[in-house]
Length: 155
Image (cartoon, rainbow, N blue to C red):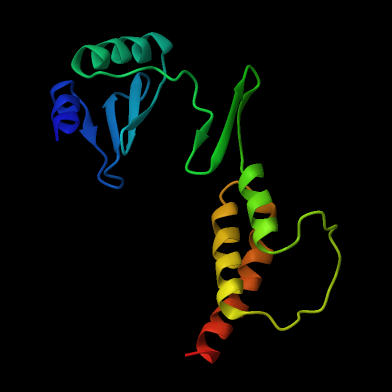
């Protein structure tokens, strides 16, 4: 409540579409703040505006600056002079471990009988991975149809 009140006092408006996102400024000069539990992700069109905001927040709250964003909700963020890249390599490895496929190479295989609960968990994990791996979107969507069939057969 204190954070929301502070942001409003600083001229921020809460997004109508995402309650965790707050915006201040115009098209050419905008500052965005995303709130996740007790973390803030701050970005803006001008670095000075971001730094001034951070200084204001440090006066209002006991907080520290963790520098550039490198990890958020399972998504790895890599930033350098060429741009920003998002990936989920750690999450991908966890899915492979969950599916018992660590060290496997891609291969065409017939679908075999599987535990429906385990399959639904794997597909749910892959659906989250699609956020940064659009190249697997079709395959995950196609396999999701089997998830629906498994769900209906076991009700």
